[in-house]
Image (cartoon, rainbow over the protein chains, first blue to last red):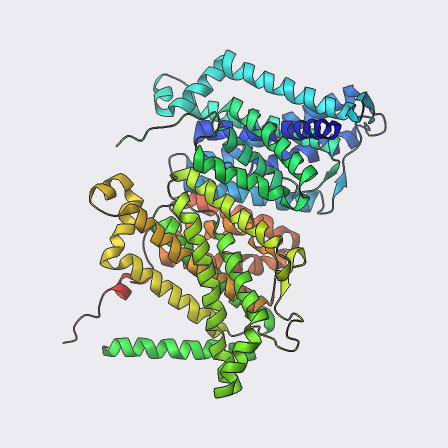
Length: 300
Length: 335
């Protein structure tokens, strides 16, 4: 029983990271109907920026919450900028050119960032500096919560609450929802669609950067290709929740994290990667719009 | 057959003979690259049928390719020696070896086609992005499933020169074979899509609802496209397995699927020669850029983005470089 609770706890921590990445996929899909395959690489760049910032500021030697916050904010700002640049360079020129051309430039951007990463950072894994000293903050029987897990969870929840606030309560959020609902109509109502799209990329990329830092905290080995699998899995999580739906991405991420951890813990770790895709295929066959998606009727 | 028909066939024969003996004159590095280009062409042409002509967006092609590669390699490792012996009993050894290779290629193609059918029937209820995502998932499931089969090597990879039948090497280093298969694949797909009945594929691509209302059995058309496409993907995988001699599931991940999708979109959706051209150029490019050292893949990615922005419709759009549609029509009456 204790083991199960511990596994669930680990799953939720890991799932909250998936959820942060999944949000970027789902928001971009919402406004552009584009599967942004370069998103996993933004997450990688987040972790790398964090690594270099922490080393440059000498934070690795003195673990503190303030240092972590500083690294987190720097990395989020850098990746927000990166997201805006990616959108400007690779996607905006293809606005209105069909939906497949941007998919290929997304693959191109992904390759570009992976290979630039290998050239600049080196292909060998790096060890993310310990920004927090790992200690147990709570224990009951065999169930233990570390301060790192707690930090990951709290940070993820705060960021998601912040996003929910932006999407539901601000002018920008309303514009985002309008573009997602019907971009041409939104444009006719005076919504600056291009600016909203850029803003969406910035927001999504900032969340991915945060996910990169949080992964660095709990699983410190980082390398230029680290974005591939988690990127794809987070995308699965977004589909699981209903692509285009913000609460869907959060729930989908958490569910996927928990399921993967349980499969690893109780079945076999070799099936860990398969389970995400089995869930993906099942959900598509039985409920293609995901848990929170709105079914769309086809008009002839 | 008309005189030009015979001339063409003769030219084709000369080209195959030249390719067959090319490995003797070229350095092995070029031979490997040329073989890879041929295999990429088969994979790209087969995906073009589904993505470009039928308008169903599949991004799991590498799964079928991998299945074909592993099925054919398993055939060669476990049954190859016996089949080769049976052929060798009646024929000279060189000829027996040549006649052996259609077997693993067919096995790879048929197994992949069977998997294609299993995937297509439920998946084709989905449309657009959801179909794409489902094929991506199916491709990864196939890959991870193979990774867990120990008799084909599992995580160690699978070598054709295994110790099941020591001394039997069923590697296949004939460029003529690879390009012969490529020509067959292109001709088969061209005949399928450019013959009268082939309009059905394009009708489904342009508007599924309208096609259905005209009495086109859209589901059957889509399944047919998927079946033929996964068959040739399997053949491409079998060629890959037999020319490389060693395969690993890492070669068939979604990264490979994306690569094949890139061939198809960059070449121009709905252009068979475009897919062939893009497959050749994009497979050769990283080798041509090798002089740039670490910068080559960065430049490759940048070129890919730039080309797509400059030609969003792909290199050839929907046009064909040579009149492939004539493959489907009977020769004009000679006067």
